[in-house]
Image (cartoon, rainbow, N blue to C red; front, top):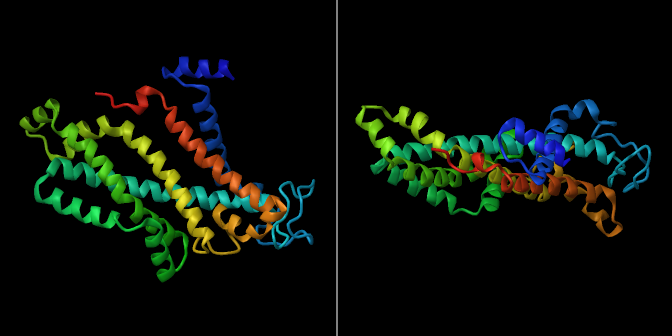
Length: 281
C-alpha cells in the first residue's frame, strides 16, 4: 500500500499519505454504490423476503433482515443513493450560493455587504435541526424539499466562510492593480479571488457535506426523511432501533455506513496535500 501511495505521489506531484488514500477509497466506494445501487441490490428494497424478523447474517442475507423481514444489504445499498445523493446535492447548492454571494459581498462592499451579511447572520442564528423540522413537517418530506431545506440551512455558513477569505484577498495588491486597469466585478471574482480561495473552500465543502449527512440522518431518525419504502441510512437506524438490545445487524450496519462515510470525509480533509489545502498565490 505504501508503494502505491508513493507511486501516486510521484505521478501527481502531491504528497499523499496512506490515511488520505484509504479515506478517499472509502468515499469513492460509497459514491460508486450510490450510482449503481439499483443494479446490485439482491432483493427489492420494500419486499419481505425473510420470515425471521431481525434475522442474523447468512448466506442468503449477508447483513441479516430488518424488523419486517426485508433484506438489510439491499436497503443499505439503496439508502446510499439517498444519503449520498441528497447530501451532495445540498452541499453543492449551499456552497455555490454561499461562496458566490460571499465573493460578491467582499468585492462590492458597502450597503450590499452590510445588508446581506446581517440578513444571513440572522438566518444562521436559527437552530438547524429546528428549522429543518419545521419546514419538512409543514411542507412534507420529499427529495427536493430535503435538498432545498438543507441548502437553506448551510448556505449562510458557507457565505460567512467565503466572505472572510475573499475580504482578505480583496485588499491585496494584485486586486488593486486589476481594479486600476478597469476590470469589472466578475473578472475580479473569477480571475483574482476564486483561484486564491479554492483550497480552503474545497475543505469547507467536505466539512459541510459531513454536517449535512449527519443532519439528514437526524431528520430521518425523527421520521422526516425519505418516504417509505425507500430509506436513507438514518431512517434505517430509526426503523430498526428496537433491535438494538439484540445486537441486530439491521441497526448496526446502517450506523456503520454513516460512520464510515463521515469519518472518511473528515480524515481525507485532514490529510489533503498541502498544495490543495493551502491557498496558492
